[in-house]
Length: 235
Image (cartoon, rainbow, N blue to C red; front, top):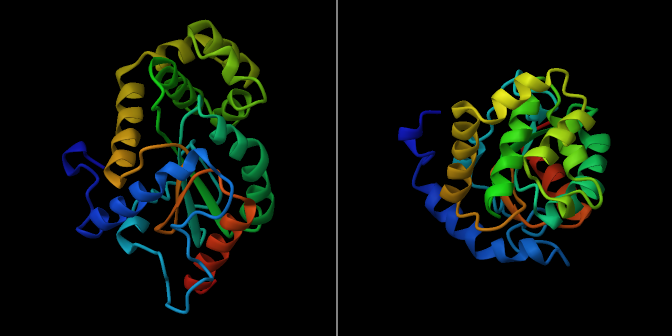
């Protein structure tokens, strides 16, 4: 989507941005269900859903930063930073369960958005992940970068190159070129702009078919949102 659109799909985005902004502080306190998630807690159909935000799902079958069928009834969009401890917690503990439970059966698609908010190393890690994706190794890089203790080693130039090797990126020279390319910076900036337009101020933040979730919430929060979205999609 061209930058000139600023990702502002409609007036409803403003309301959703305010909602996500209010609950973003819970991203560092994943002790219970996010107050932005009301799936199953209200008799009102599609409670907590902002239809305008459903359009943020790219559903590009060739997107290397996504997993799951492009036509899956539910799309979970994740805005995250590789230096974020709770993003790592979600990546190690919750995301694999979601993939096993929902992605394989065709219910769920997960789309990653780079949202570096912790400075230069965060931005470099985001570009490195994008560059790994150019060679079909994004999710392998994602796993290596979120391994226990990985963020404590930082994301300097040598470190992200080492992570690319661990991820099995086949062409290290191309990886280096892509890492420092204008295309990488533009892709990361576009994701970051989208997150800020939504009102996200911390990581991780999520959308499940237009339903905002803030923080590395328990598995039950995500299953409730995904199951509700599946019902709403009539699938």
